Image 1 (cartoon, rainbow over the protein chains, first blue to last red):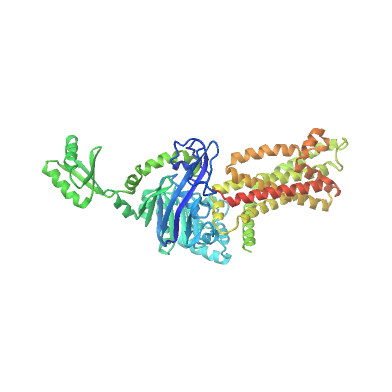
Image 2 (image 1 turned 30 degrees about the vertical axis):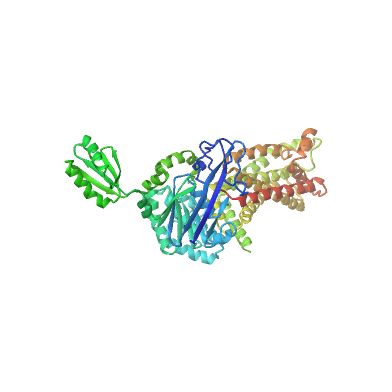
Length: 378
Length: 253
């Protein structure tokens, strides 16, 4: 059992409209995720709605959207765990349930051994949570923000003061801690948001899309700060729709799509699950050479797929390193000149494509358009 | 114990935010002061009209004005909550082990204190203009205003948590405020109104409050409007606080 233990977690809610309602309250996660596209108006689709009295029930002109459809997950202590998925996949909804802000319809969540529904205060004392909106009060200084938050966690004023000093050093808050929140830049605000989530030294830190809207420098800084948290033994659970963030920052990730986890593992494992490596070739005498090369290589056992992508031939192969010499030999043997050859590992986007049948960037476009109008309030 | 500590910490934070925003405190006072200076003098000519209450124009008008301050300085507090929800401040508080009731009370108590401060300024301005007031009656009136503030602030917060955005909140509040104001006798005493309007006004808690406050100001503690007003306001304040507390418990999601 991990420090976070999730079993069969479910949440659905009612939204207006004919099954494609881009309802978006304060959460950035729009319910368009659930494949409710064709559901007729008023069709209650919550599974076992009779069993779970809290489950949403649709009235006329409304539709029930399953935002989270039964998630099982275990996160180990001291890891950076990433929840990767497009906007509207159910990431924020899940995170809110883990952080005791939203009651689940079904399933259970235990954090550090405590149940989020039955013992919310025990859970709250042990977790920090930074929402997409952050939490920095514009009308107070950084210090006042931190003091209030620490006091609400039940830490004495003296201890909070000491803690603020140590956060000023570790998060480099020296220049902002005595200024009003409304004077902060995006990156500065994010830093204070993070500090607010850490003021009581929680064992588990939840960060909802921590780097959305940050410039590359602030983003890199934040990544480093998250890594140093892990070094101190803190478990960090982040949601993200950035592939590179999941890939570079996270020890393990779960890919979530339409309310369900579709894959889970280290970035390395997940990429290993996709059919092999990608070899990209550019050839002499482009027109017929590409077709000829494709014809030549496709029947080979190690080639899973061959696609002509504009002026290059893209091969998906099982073991890239072993395949390269063989490919070169074959092409040379039939007199096709190779101008350049590149071997690349599959990206997480390839993984996403592989497990969901659509690419993350594409999912992002379709899911985000109606939701983003009101969703992202920063 | 933690509840009281949290409440104090939250109240201090809210008060600090209000006092820092001096522009808003001034805007809140601007309208009542204008009424005192530009409207109350118009009542001088009405002093001999049958049905006009006892006392000079300022003694008749100031109690109504105080009720207006109580209603309108608290009715719009929901807007602040909407903005704090948007910036994640409320959620950030809700993720701590503090009780939701402390969050709500911290806001409502701040609103009541701000309201009382504004009322004292209004009274301080009205006295040199000609207001004569019974001190005990004033104290009792302030008590009714605390109830009014608790009622309107809770209502505004509950509504804000329900609609979560400014436009709907403004629509509902504006829809309610005009009839409440017109049917309360704040500007002109309802004793001047036709019987039909007087009858409708019987449903308005603020009408009793205004009549009661006028009576208290001249030292008459026997007017039945006082007791009815206090009972009515207590009931509504309780209901509306209960609604707000429930909304806070449900959270912002």
